[in-house]
Length: 250
Image (cartoon, rainbow, N blue to C red; front, side, top):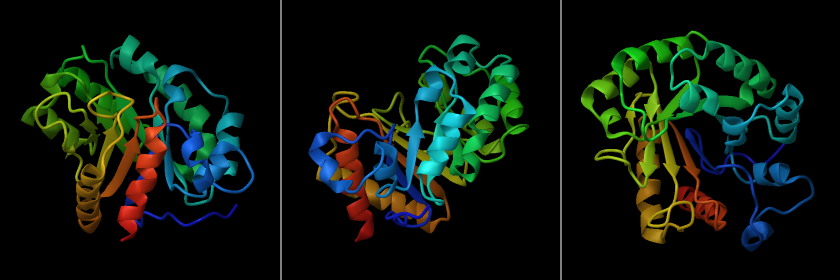
């Protein structure tokens, strides 16, 4: 399948959490096909959040792969069974099942996103054992979004760096320094949830211009950079992602 080249240029993967096409911007996604097919003609990447809540059959992942251009990339949210129920302890069986199911994406499966519950504090022994388990099975992009202040420390960042894990730069930030990526020197991952109203607020032109500059700096340094808009509740994510793509074209 062919599609529009990634408009954000090499090294920057702009998209949204999911691939909903709000009515206000649907004219930007012309042509026939499913929402994903139309979305993938414009954006180079998407984040799959539904994998956090439930398993998907390999045939579903295969359909998503065949619906998108060859250069399209997905980031997949690791199941909550691993992060919220087991709280990173054990988890090899559900992780193996998740990786087996999603393998049907092929090369389009480019990154795993591990989002932690707000109550999960950094425990070096638990974190090291978990990351080693993941890295034994997955050698590609790996991002972690902690939401407890203890993860935003030098020791936690050093551990993430050792395993080449990118700490997510989130907005709103959960702790001092949380607005900037840390850990990996090869992967930066931005998740923009909307501010001041989480999941609803739209980012303004000044914020997006400054963001575009940061993404260009990562690209210049040879860092693969994801920028995912998660302010989807009001439909702002797709509009913000489109605006950012236009800025990156200039």
